[in-house]
Image (tube, rainbow, N blue to C red):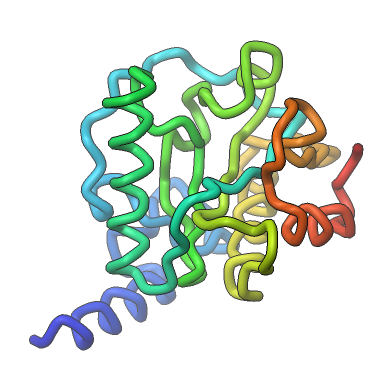
Length: 195
């Protein structure tokens, strides 16, 4: 089977809930999440649990290269993890989840492990969702926005997020330009956003 056909078959299986990307414990309302094993993640050395349900979601951007295909997004997720582990000396990729412009969610530390995305005050009380790319001058495509919104709805459905969770932009809780001016303008209109 050719590579494009294999990717199409994987995507269809995931949408139907038959592929590996659909966790057996995840309700049908949750879209597919690309597991670490499928994007080639290094084994995690993190173990500090995240107390659930979590009240906050912090939205950021990687400020690096964007990706718009499963192949390029897998590579970008690997690049982000390599930087965090090899350069920053963290136990894993910092984020709980990464969003690609391909419209897929890539598992970082997942729902159950504390992230390293927003500093010592916010990491223990929030889920970190990052968009892979730089959104100072451009907006993520609608499929990436939908993926993030679906992920948060999934978090509520599985009890990882409180129903009254609050969204914060990375710049709301740390001195940074993240999540970029354009993405920040979008999330400010989301119902759970609180400055």
